[in-house]
Amino acid sequence: MPENTRPSSGTVTDATETRRSEGPRVRPRNGLDRYFQVSARRSTVGRELRGGLTTFFTMAYIVVLNPIILSGADISKQTLPFASVAAVTALVAGVMTILMGVVGRYPFALAAGLGINAIVAVYAATQMTWPEIMGLIVLEGLLITVLVLTGFRRAVFEAIPPQLKTAIAVGIGFFLTIIGLADAGVIRPGIPLISFGVKGELAGWPIFVFVVGLLVTSVLVVRKVKGALLLGILFSTVLAIIIEAIAKIGPRTGPNGAEVNPHGWALQVPTVPTKWFGTPDLSIVGHFSLFGGFSRIGILSALLIVFALMIADFFDTVGTMTAVGAEAGLLDENHNLPNSTGVLLVDSVAAAAGGAGSVSSNTTYIESAAGVGDGARTGLASVATGVLFLVAMFLSPLALIVPSEAAAPVLVIVGAMMMTQVRDLQWDDMSLAIPAFLTIALMPFTYSITNGIGAGVVSYVLLRTAVGRRREVHLLMWIIAAVFVVYFALQPLQQLF
Image 1 (cartoon, rainbow, N blue to C red):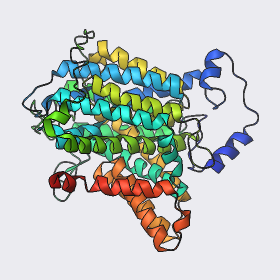
Image 2 (image 1 turned 180 degrees about the vertical axis):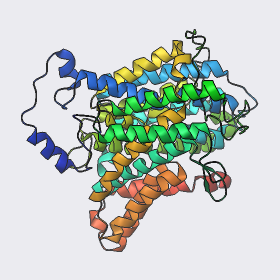
Image 3 (image 1 turned 45 degrees about the vertical axis):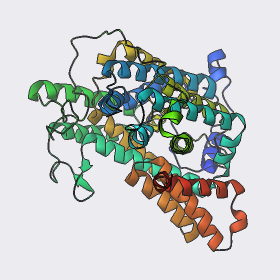
Image 4 (image 1 turned 180 degrees about the horizontal axis):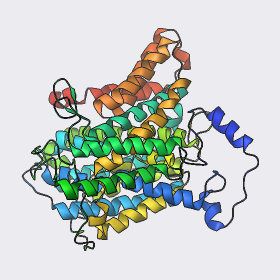
């Protein structure tokens, strides 16, 4: 782990004891230090900037992946311009991540949410025009903003018991690991459910880059080298560029998204670009119809889609805040993030901003944990990440040099860091153990933070009631459980109505 960063134990008690043992807090050196609480959180400006850089390189793939998903989707026979989606994806991510740093003051980065894109594709893509879909996303973001301003969203966050909050952090650790392994091509969809590499073998140079990068980054981490995760990404990228220059491997998928070369690079092909500068195409900004979807598919159907979007946005952020905050040692004695209203407000506004930009809802990214793993503790890291996203609008070829196989080792290692919190779960009481287990298991296996939280909440309320501990269940937990029951039954409800 990087020097001067505290190993994550997952317990607030340990975090508090660590801070006490370090003596009195350091007085802020200047206004920047005071505003972002850099010294107060035992960090430095250099460490924050390094953490912001690590987060950017870990999630820069979204600038490529989001336009691949959106421009390739069959949205009422429309085609979105790839270059414009890429530019606006970077624009909205940059602006909202900077806003998160300045207002939320925590090391969280935001970008277009892939889970939301999946909901859009399943529930809406063939039923509405793209401006109508984006209008529903803007509406969903505005509704969540109202919930933040009324204090309801924070109240829900605080009502979740510590056992489930710890399970959420552990589950997200597993989720990050699955994402990393999938990005590297180590695991792929197949028969059985997940296959190992290519036909049961770790074949191909991209997987070689991942394996070597994982080993080198692990050595840097255990040797406590400063910037270990960032150095790991840079080493793996250079190795990938050299290998591609010699072997001419090419991409894994063709223009239509079909796999044409199982041994190829998953997304970006790591080559030194011949062109470094490009003028961003922002032509799709503002193309949304706030209430057009209601007239197109009916009020009830549109409301069900908005409900699904709200639940996914709402609880993905709860999970991310809990996991990243725990990894950074920033949670209080009740496993809550202090002064979280700013974080929740920016995240809610980002959902509406993504819809207004026509690039889908933006949400807080779990990849923020990579920057935290490299030392980030304050919103200054988010400002750095956001600025890099804005730069990527003009220097997109440079941002696309890093292949997903080079960033994937960092996700696996951060997953291991977050996994250490499993020691704090209570396993001797099955009414607590089963909800925790379902939360942990469903996140990676369903590729959804929301599904894991929902399974944990519903089973927690049911099982604590079954053992006569109903009075220990917060009233809001009953409400959340009922909401999740509706969420899980959404498809039958849509068919019914």
